[in-house]
Length: 176
Image (cartoon, rainbow, N blue to C red; front, side, top):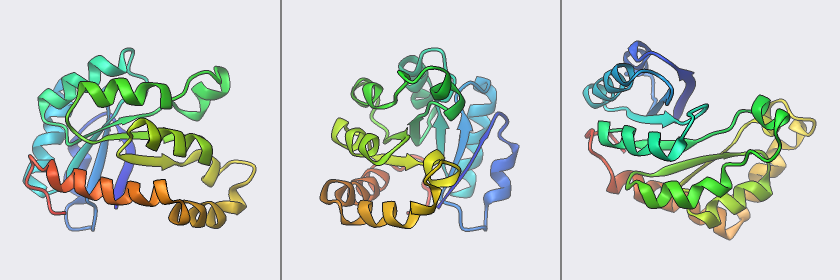
């Protein structure tokens, strides 16, 4: 379970302790001090910290910086507003570059099932398809898409890879 609130300050991470959360995110454009504070809170509370690279001017550089700070996961993310303005913005193309630059698990947000499959093929450890499932024109097909992912061999394997990646990378001592 994850909390994804795209926070810019770390104080909220303590509020996740004891509520069943395993992951909490902080925005990669937050100050280094806030990211270090989030990582510290994560280590103290057993919650893994995901740094969401949303709006980072150089996602590869920022991924390396936050990994050095101790982030448990980096997450490649273009928001739906940015995507609507420039449809060429796509996480899939960045997955191999960021995957090669860091040792921590890499997450990717995509806008449809095809993009999700492409992100997994490109090396994403964690996959999020949010916008079309929540507010998109076909949001009523969420259950169908979930069934497709569970039944899709490559994407089902992704769940195993995520678990293995999270078990294998556990600097914070967080619970699996």
